[in-house]
Length: 163
Image (cartoon, rainbow, N blue to C red; front, top):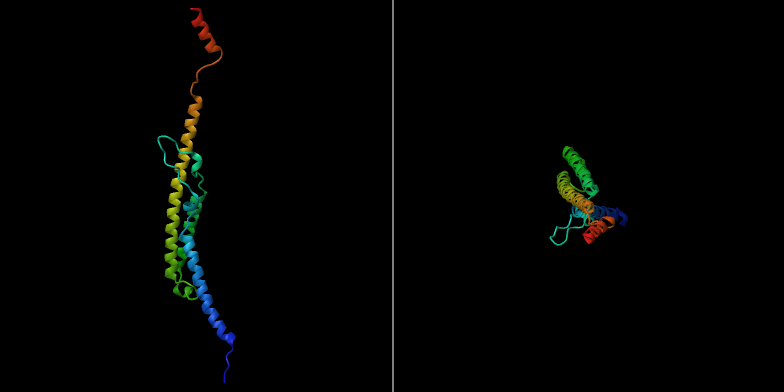
């Protein structure tokens, strides 16, 4: 008579639970990563210009850090897709996802990061142009000739008063 210990059955059950947790973890990571792109999260477009109030330059993002990060992540996904595409199905035997699923996730992430980078570069460029235009307008305002005060105006008054 062979007696199996409860621990042995527990190990097989734990293996199934472990595999299920791995699948859940991979799925959670996929959802979290798919819902964010650096530029989508951190970059703000300039507010729309209105006739009564020009947009404030501080209300938008001009730093290109987020779109550059998206571009780096896009490059990483392209490399990852290449590695997965060149791998054999046997390389994925013990993996929680198949090779095809890995390639599909890579393509989805590459699309996400490409869209986020495009949005980020577009928004930061618009913001930089806004800040530059407002700086030029401010400089032009300061350079405008203002009404003279002091001696020049007194001379005018003196001339007018003596005539």
